[in-house]
Length: 405
Image 1: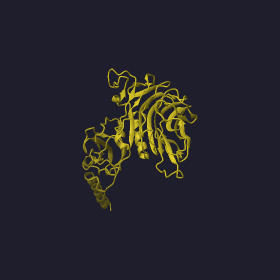
Image 2: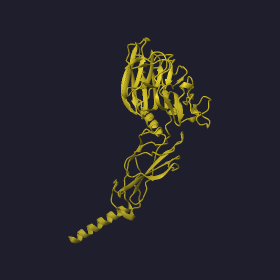
Image 3: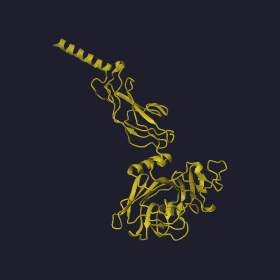
Image 4: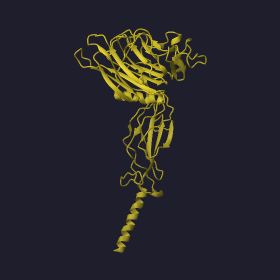
């Protein structure tokens, strides 16, 4: 009996030792495994189920998640590389990312329109690396190409788009520091360039933002059917801005319209407001000023997106349109409209309202005002309705670009 047990134990030990030579023979996956020693010569199985869960921003790669690799002797780590060719390491050589199964690189220098590939492999306790799984090609998110119907983009990163009173770009050594023109970089059919009405209206520029003084500075743009003199049933605009120590005075970030119809967002009484109004009945009923709002903090950066969607319009007796406002990727509220945003000749302003506007407190009366005390970094208008994915992508891109996280 003892002899039989000895033989059986010996056979078992031989079986275990054989696993050192073929550590996947049982098809068992393990993050810890057993220490199979130097005889382990086979790599873990290839990773499966690679899935992209966020887009690439300015300094961040897409975030990926994947299924755990299988290895009888145990996976000790995963390694990650990024290249400009499938399986390449031109941007990031293979680096140890530990035992996580969700990861993104966050300190990259990405080139716009360059295609990249991510490779991930598992390494076992003896240093054997699996065949890498390689992502499909990906590129940095680009609002111009990735946001359909983008009609306007103002971007303070683009020094050539910021011009002084002598038309000198901010990239010039002789740039005065005053902003007389902020040029549209959307590459659309029309150039919606913003300008200062006079010297008193010029904000100042420090790379990479426009500073508004809260007393006299604002920019405006020429009327255009894409902006205000055409009727729209869908529109969204997004701004990246930073408050000052004053968040109680009424201050406009963006305003289009006059005392009759328009859209805007602004700061007042320690809150941020997103508003819409169409007080004339243009055939489908009048819409009194409607808004949503949220508390806002001093000396803080924000990304705000205001979305108007009346694509379900079927006539005066049909359903209402919807309005949704997002601040730092959080939906702060929704409201509705009984009317489209009809054509108007009300002026458009960034950093203040031009000629007249309408707030939650009522019409402003004629004249300019509502001057913003703070900084504006970027502004975009899209004549379309972004999906939930688009809203998130805009936030991921802009929060990375302007260091909000």
